[in-house]
Amino acid sequence: MIADTHGPRARSRGALMRVALAAVMLLLVWQGSVGTIQSSNAPAGSQASREVLRHGRDVYMANCAVCHGETGDGNGMAAHMFRIRPRDFRRGLLKFRSTPSGSLPTDEDLLQTVTQGIRWTGMVGRSDLPEADRKAVVQYLKTFSPRFASERRTLPVALPPAPPKSGDLVVEGRRLYRDADCAKCHGDRGIGDGPSAPGMKDDWGWPIRPSDLTWRPLKRGSAPAEIYLTIATGLSGTPMPSYGDSLDSQEIWALVSYLESLVSIEHRLSPLRHLGEEQAGWMVVRMHGMMGPGMMGPDMMRRMPMMR
Ligand code: HEC
Ligand code: HEC
Image (cartoon, rainbow, N blue to C red; front, side, top):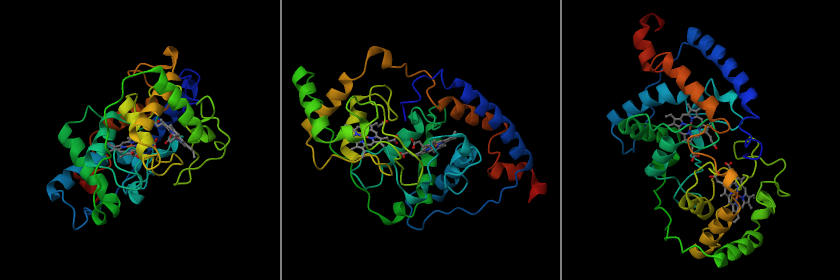
């Protein structure tokens, strides 16, 4: 996915077009939108209080539904603008977790995603929202999938400290990269062009590509610990497997070291830059904000009583 986005400039024309289109579209939808507001769909066994869920729902309708849809189906009115689609929350499959493969993320994992975003995608980090809002929306997100009410929480995987940097570690990592078949998807040079890459789909049926591992940030960020977690826990809903059972922590750290050695200085982009689809993501967030808080949420009904 990073392969065709590293010229942020090369893509900016297309991005501008989409920005313009989206502006028109958002205005049209705003003019004509009549939403039906359902009562809270909180599961009976939910731990969050009704008050937190109600607040989370307001935050969601005001900031998230435009992409993720009012029902959490990933089909909000701006969803079609993005090549990397907003998540459908209903199956409870979350990519960026600290928990083992197949398990649900922790609240902290979700909070981190909401706060720092998913780089290169429309999912921009919302550290600008008050922490109480971000925490409440995390509780509300969990009501979209029955998994959160029915499954036991799992503990995060252990994250032992990184061994000191050394050439040996990188050599060991290179060997593991080959032996663990990373190259099948990510390619011999790590640029995402392995033999299994073409035609790959994610679990929601959307096309997906193995990442170009020679750029930073990656989707999850640039910190070695984040890359460690990706390898140890896998990315649920995508072909990226978990290696937590087949590799020990030293081996995973060796892989992280090797992956770091693939990144040239020019490929280490400033974290402040808007990358890939982030610009379009911010555009949607700002347009939405400008039209008033809660434009599709309960506030809209309050402001426009005649629509009831
Ligand atoms: C401009 C569109 C957009 C908006 C607005 C948006 N998202 Fe997203 N979101 C995305 C996209 C695109 C993805 C999928 C990225 C990927 O799979 O790589 C995503 C994915 C996610 C995920 C899945 C993370 C994982 O580990 O799989 C969560 C959780 C999430 N968004 C929460 C939110 C919340 C909460 C809000 C509101 C505060 C929000 N999003 C607003 C576009 C958006
Ligand atoms: C069967 C294919 C497949 C194999 C094998 C595979 N990956 Fe991946 N990997 C993917 C895909 C697809 C993605 C992109 C996920 C996305 O963009 O949501 C990915 C993403 C990643 C990411 C980036 C996560 C981010 O934050 O953007 C890292 C790091 C990674 N893989 C490392 C590895 C390593 C190391 C190995 C071998 C030990 C490996 N992968 C094996 C398919 C694979």
